[in-house]
Length: 348
Ligand SMILES: C=C1C[C@]23C[C@H]1CC[C@H]2[C@@]12CCC[C@@](C)(C(=O)O1)[C@H]2[C@@H]3C(=O)O
Ligand SMILES: O=C(O)CCC(=O)C(=O)O
Ligand SMILES: [Fe+2]
Image (cartoon, rainbow, N blue to C red; front, side, top):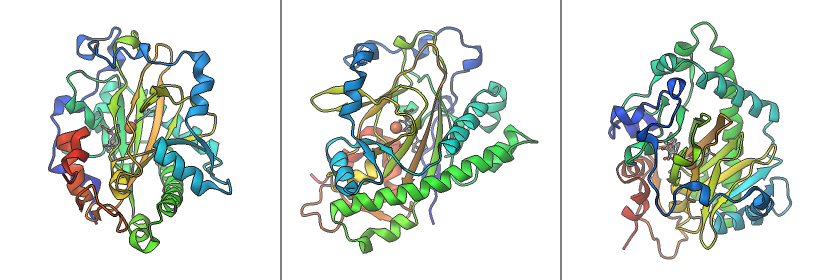
């Protein structure tokens, strides 16, 4: 079965785009990280003032996984927003807390130590900047650590005598996320009226990756950005954010802040779901701003079908808008075209 590493190894990044800023020794935002003014920037003009937060909370749907009409709630949210906040999801808050604690522990290590597990140019896992960095003219105020499968190899380099807790926590979280994501995917397919036979086998074998994101406190948050506007490439992302910072773009409204709700997880759709649903569940554009006081951590869980399996608009689609290809082929197109990947495979 194809893996993430196999998919990315043929589309290496340049090493200068993999190495994050040395946040340990940085006291001012360097020129390389100062974003020029554009219509989408500076972000501060678009951030809703905090007294509007109540409003933004009521905009983005908040869904109770145990609600009797959950299929309809999720279906609607996916069609109109591409994002929702999920409560009653069954992931213990203590586990979420532990994951965040371990992530902070990792990012607080000296830069020199973190660089020992730097993701290789053609690699998928380890410490480094986001893959999207290679498409940008400016750098991001961000560092990440990607786990696919067991984190033990990297963790034992970071903590030669004490990597067990980190690994146990991450593996446990991945296991619980896998089952939650599978549950959510089945609910989405039910709404789309896709027969389980058509897709369930692929989803049961689905692969995943866990991305720990770190956005250190920034001396001048208005001049830079944590993650520039992007869509995620996989089926779905299940995210936990420790503090405010995530915004989504909604037609007719603009950038909307996703205010953290205690205990809730943010679910957003990615490109592969856009393809499977024939555009009925569009992938959602989002971005992350940084702040001056807090070191913000987020934990993103991505799931996708086996990379050697085929993805295409589901069989019932009357007029498929995307051509069929393997997950690996799609990820490689993404690695070359980033946000234009979906238009590359759109049937004209
Ligand atoms: C499983 C994934 C999903 C990845 C690639 C790989 C590991 C890291 C993920 C992110 C995280 C940050 C945004 C993004 C756009 C990026 O640059 O790296 C994501 C990307 C994707 O959704 O394509
Ligand atoms: O930090 C966040 O809130 C979002 C992170 C994100 O967009 C990603 O990991 O793809
Ligand atoms: Fe994202």
